[in-house]
Image: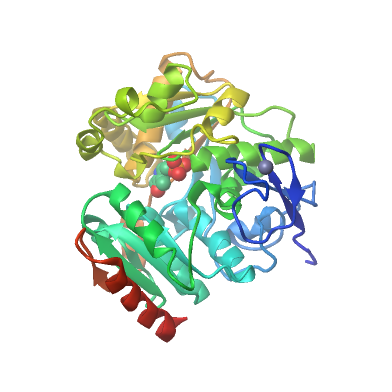
Length: 426
Ligand SMILES: *Cc1c(COP(=O)(O)O)cnc(C)c1O
Ligand SMILES: [Zn+2]
């Protein structure tokens, strides 16, 4: 049980190795993702519930008492239906019959745990998180479980999505008029206030390594790194995380020397990364890849996939991930997603987050188009589900918005409010 959790940070641009100060930037100021390098080259799975099993490869020094974690199993019904020999489902959500107890029902909770823990260990300040719903709910729940404060900024219409299973006064929830992009914009300004800090999104190695436990769970269950990894993406953070985790598993030596092909997907009509990748471009072109963004975003079924500023071009980001793994991005329409959702629920017996429905639809398309060999080991990252099941077990407690803002609300007014809250709760 003795584990030091030793690690360093490495810049994916210049390769420099340095100690973790809690920052998400290279000391040389390179615009590149910063990765963890763990001193434990071999993954030792601790005898602990959930994701804390993979503590050795998380950038934290103590283990918060949480139970969220991915669960991988071999599919029978869906695999038979779609003609796959070895289809592995890594489920993130609430499905206690399978051992999955991620209460807020998405893999965002895997990000929230090490991110909040690392911030508290590094004394980074109170984290400010922008969200369309799933991230905010995950951080609210984990903040409640860890009894640590967090500020969550969401579009007003996402309010019904922010709930926890335990009562808490540790969450300061602020709403904005507009969409996810407006929430991101406002949260950036709020994060500059005293005592607060931006959580960093994809740039935060704790977020990525938290999500990377999905790949660790799959590989340790299957006995080898899968040949394909399938996931619907908005930012692509989950895919980058899985790729980085697979690289670590190769170094470990016991799980094979191959990287999984990353088969990603986006929801039509908003598919900026799918467009850029198809055109073999590292840059997303706003004019051609995101024409009529607001209109397109309003039409997609899975709105957690509508990130306008994903870490696609950045060194160590989605473009590099797809290039190194020989992957691809499949566009999926709403009809395909909804049909796939129904099929999955019938076959496997659990409900899906709309984004996970896009993932299942992309599996069908990719197999049909010859992008996936159905006789190899295929890992399906079911990023969210069990919303019906969790309601049977828990009363879902809504988090109330402490402050509703619109474009006219001056920052100094928000600042005064936040300052009072910090004094009282942190
Ligand atoms: C956020 C989210 C995604 C997309 O994840 P990224 O890897 O960050 O693009 C997929 N599914 C669900 C359920 C999510 O909440
Ligand atoms: Zn650098």
